[in-house]
Length: 277
Ligand SMILES: [Zn+2]
Image (cartoon, rainbow, N blue to C red):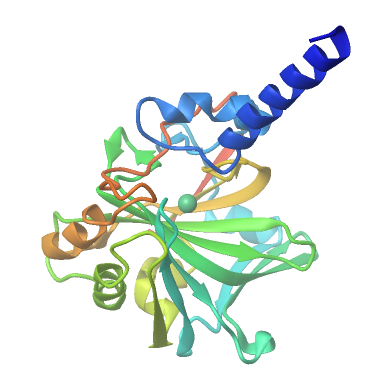
C-alpha cells in the first residue's frame, strides 16, 4: 500500500467506526459516558438530567411571577387525540397524529409581554427516573415533548411513584399499549386519548414545578431545551410499572433501564414555582 492508499484505508476504517457508533448508542456497560465520542454536545455545560431540590432552587413566588408578567397555560390537553405508540428499542413513545393542528394540545408561556406557544408532539418514558428530587429517584419519568414555531423544544416532565393509592387514569392506557409493543419496532395505534389524563391537577393550576434550561437526555443531547419538572409524582400501579420493565431493546435483550445519569448543574439557574399556600 502506498501512502495515499494507506490514508484512504485508514479514513475508511475511521468512517466505519464513526458510522457504527452513530445511532448505535446504548445505556448499558457505562454506555452513556461514551455518547460524547460520537455526539460532542453530550459533553456540553447545560446537560440534562440534573438533581433538583427546593434548597438549591430560586423560589419564584406567584406575586413575583405576576410582577414579571409570567403565566403558563395548558390548552387543549382535555380533548381526545389519536397517535401511534411504538417501541424504538430505547423507550416506548406515543407520537400524536393531529387532524387539526390548531386545536392540538399546547402550552403557552407569557413572559414579560412575549408569548411562546409549544405544541405537544410526543411523550415517552424513562425507567427509573432521570431527574432526582430531594435525593430521591422515582421508578418512572414521563417526558412530554413540545415544539414551538421555531422548533425550540420544551419538555414537561412528570414523575411516577408506586408509593401511592389509586393509579393515575391515563397510565392504564399507556401500560396496556406498552404491553403490546414489547419488541423493538412494534407499534400499536392509540385512539381517543386525552393527554390531560397523564397530568397532575396541580400543574393545571400552573404551579408546583421546577423550570430550567437543559438538553435532550439522549444523543445528540441538543441543548437549549426548556425543562418543566413537576415536583409531586403521580401514582402508578406495580403491575403497570412491570409493563415498562418488560420492554425489549433492539438486540432483543431486556431494556432494564433507560435513564441517563445526573449531569453537572454548572451554576445554571433553576426556578421553583410554588403553589399558593
Ligand atoms: Zn426523555
